[in-house]
Amino acid sequence: MLENKESTIGGVLAPIKSHTPKNMISGISQAVLEGSQLPISGIERTLIDATIYTEEVGGAGEALLWFKTVLSSRQLLSINEFRELLNKVHAQIRSVSARIGFALERALGDRIASLDVGTEMVDLLEEIQGRMIESGTSYNWGPKADGMVYFERWHLHVSRKYLNQLRV
Image 1: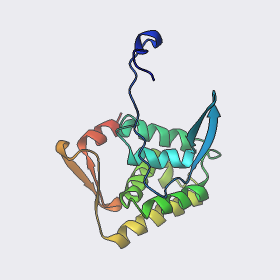
Image 2 (image 1 turned 90 degrees about the vertical axis):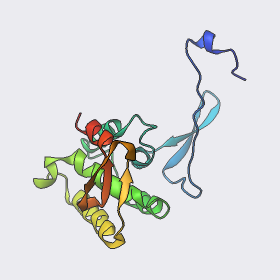
Image 3 (image 1 turned 180 degrees about the vertical axis):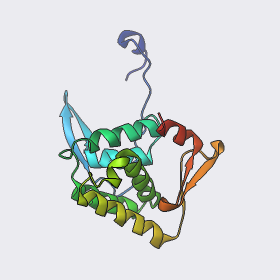
Image 4 (image 1 turned 60 degrees about the vertical axis):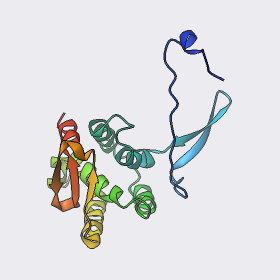
């Protein structure tokens, strides 16, 4: 339908593949935009997706920016909804909990030590860490070709490429 339309719209059209595992549509609602029905992700689901589809969102630095933006305003994130959604996703993609814990800790930075994040967030981080300890499994985040650095607290090997992006 869109063949040969690129010159009239001023750019290249590239199809975007959407890959949502079965039974994981929580956190997504439908919206109608110019007559088309589109899936719209909530804030909680967007943060989780950023740790699953990190390359697709622009890398770990972009994912961390999303976390920092959401966490800078306590009204944006529903901790209970986030926890519930994380539990559902974790049942199918176990590495998501380790990645979320690591990303939250990075995004919060010094605010954790000063307990400036609220008890709900501290409880969530402790819950995620407990889940990682119970599993006894370690997970990866990022391309292995760049080398990996292990973070014992989260049982997570993070690629050097992602770590460099997270320092920006």
